[in-house]
Length: 89
Length: 178
Length: 115
Image 1 (tube, rainbow over the protein chains, first blue to last red):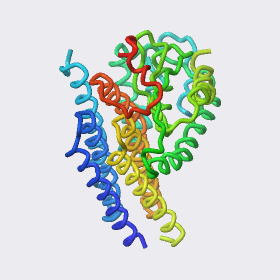
Image 2: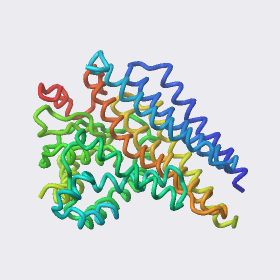
Image 3: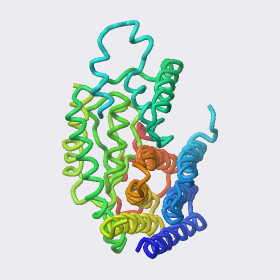
Image 4: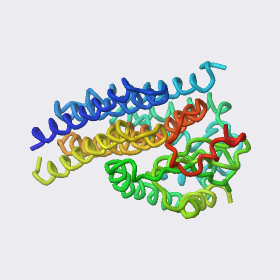
């Protein structure tokens, strides 16, 4: 049963990623694009977790955790850049 | 919440003990975090986790802001369950709002007058407001007396603000500040 | 693995995927930035949370002992999502992005002590 449910879930999350990509391309403003990237990394974590269950391995856990950490830092740094025009004051 | 209740009795004023374990709550959190990270419950890893839990607060405690003691663990637990419940239930509401025609939504900016004044409590309140669906905290006024909130769909601003104050701010104030 | 467990895991995964999709639909179709901010911060985060719960159940019932480390991802996301939403919102206010005209309380964002 899981072997049919997981591909469906993978498809749904991929659809979500395509929608994010669309927002990333059309913008219109920079915060919109940052928000789209933010959502994309969250959905990438979802994809990795799903794929980990599909392959029955815990190897992808570290990758997912790293994406979570780095994605958050990236979002904050980009927003900070928009706020100040500079990252380190 | 168990780590913080355990540390209640270690916070007795033995200064030597405090010097060795400057942040008991942080130490317990780090201990649990390390065990979760390695995903293994062996004696060796417990000892290694204990070492990290001692070393990291010992060398970094001067960078951390002031200690915040949890006044009422049980109230905190109740508050946490209320928030989790709100996240789950109200996400359905937001899902329906997002999927219906966008011109029927009535967004609004609201100013929430703050009763809580400490950084940590304001942060917790803002995070709670952002996580419970329908509202996002967008900015804090310079004098820290107002929080700017954007709501996706609101019929009555006064009522929404009163609800946030009563449901989230009052318990937080009681837990950390009273 | 028993059928009941598989059904529970499937429900978690599908609910999670559904919420992730709802968040992205919100991001793609809502009319102004401040409304778009709502979808990703909440629905997508809850979506990942649902999948983590599914993964937790799956790896804990394989007979190799309890596996709880996925919960770190969920905790981290639930702590950071409001923070990134707040700071992206702040950046948008700083750039004075337009909100749709029927938004109430627009005067609040023009107060000098806010921005």
